[in-house]
Image (cartoon, rainbow, N blue to C red; front, side):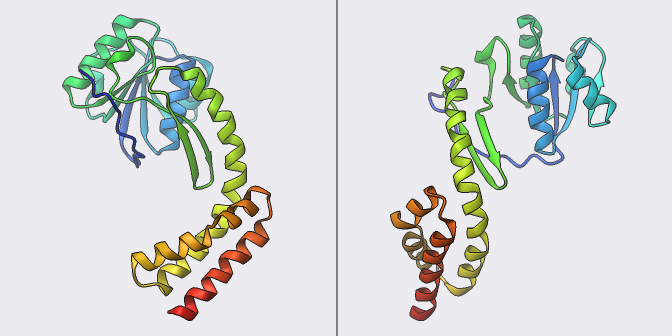
Amino acid sequence: MKAKNPYPALLWLQGKRACVVGGGHVALHRVEGLLDAGVEVCVVAPEIGEGIKKLVEEGRVQWEHKRFSAALLQGVSFVVCATDDPDVNRQAAWAAKAMGALVNMAAPPLELSDFTVPATVRRGDLLFSVSTGGACPELSRRLRGELEYLSGVYAPWLERLVPIRAEMKEKLGSSEERKAFWREALSEETMALVCEGKLDKAEELVRNAVGRSRTES
């Protein structure tokens, strides 16, 4: 029986290997996400769509031009099941689990998934994600549109905070001092200015807090 609540996590997967079973549009979406994370991807499918074919021609993806077999999963950490044949998806999922690989079911039977892929918005170092646990993916996509707007508001602000954070790590010795500083620096007044697009004024407030922290220390 699956646990009631999934464990949310961000994974650094550079150099890991993944197998995507299927060659259509859904498989392409998963392949692109894995490549962005630095994963080595092998696609297993008798036929592939133009999107995956382009990635193969560019040398970014390996293509096993054949039907699925368990032997193709040697050395992989993740398996994505994305064919339009539930029996093939089921076979690939159980073979992956037997080898200790994690499974994402991008097509039925969805209940065999070990993890889902949330709707995400990434802008620079800022990443928003939202998931309904598979209950209503359409809502996740709707909320993603709202997160697109928020990323445009907060990503430029994050860029301004990065050098300030580095400075305060040097100036303030304890984690409690740093927490107190950020509580003051990121006040409601400051964040209201950010939401209004007044980043210069918001940064000025944070810089004033930096100055007070220097005096107190």
